[in-house]
Length: 461
Image (cartoon, rainbow, N blue to C red; front, side, top):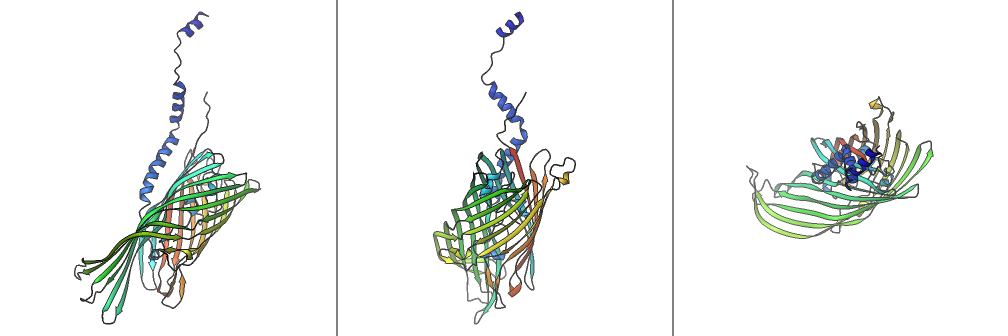
């Protein structure tokens, strides 16, 4: 009794901050979580800078706004032929259908980043040339604000342009002329997406994009056989700063033992991208021996507002999946590129469409001893009728289409739900008929998906 009274009298008073100290201690014990957040932040900052770099692309990027990145940016879905409209899951960030955000785990923080390597062979009926490039692909994050409201942010490329083409001709009384077309640059998109769960089976979502980027296109005319004619060059620099929007609907329901079917719809809104255009026309002479150009005069210079009309598009998809064991999906997308116009002038583009199918399976996702039994394997394919239709030297019009097959896998990281994703795409773009150019390529995508738990209450004894 005396000892108990003594302990009460001389007991150290309880500090009101001790509760917060315990919380901080528990929080910082969760080292993998903090490392993942730091990694996400650093890679996001790097991605915003790196994604703005345009790669060497295709001669067909001369048309429209360049090569449009209209397929799924997620490395996992790339391995499945690019299917995305009806794909969803607790650890998947699928920005192609923003309604899919509603299906992520309410306690999860998701981060996804990727890059790619590409090797191409461009060929005509009698010439060929190889090209290689690599670039950052995307950075995205997604998490829940409430059990029925999820949000996502990220940055990804929208279009790229990179080409140099020479066309030789002979003019009577002048001799040989050479026209050079050269372009580079591209557009990128930072997006903020939100999805809302409507009841048990429906979800609605929308992405708001801030589109930014710069592109340069120049046309130069040379007279290599004449000393009486001087060359001229027309340069157009375009800077875009504007907004775009797309929307999605997702329906899913159980159809059997641990099996679900999903149907997704997407819509991209027709919109005018606004920016600034600088037009610069100059005359010059070229030293034949040194190939050094000397500026002679500025013929025209002007800066004006620029408006590019981007077309509307629709997409539909269906998926069937059984838990974490397997999933299959199919998509159809259509875009009204005939609506495309720059400064009110159309580019004579045609409407495009694309169909894709894909599947994935995991032999035994609960396996403890067999690592490769927990690896997810994927395969798929796609066909796209492009928005470019060109006349060939055979007198016929040729649609510039793309076809490809894909494969991929996800490698689980130890003691975590995070994964390393890889995808391989082998395809063909364009045609050699009519003297046109065909690209055959192999593309490797590598990405990392970080899956961490948020807002979990842990009990300590």
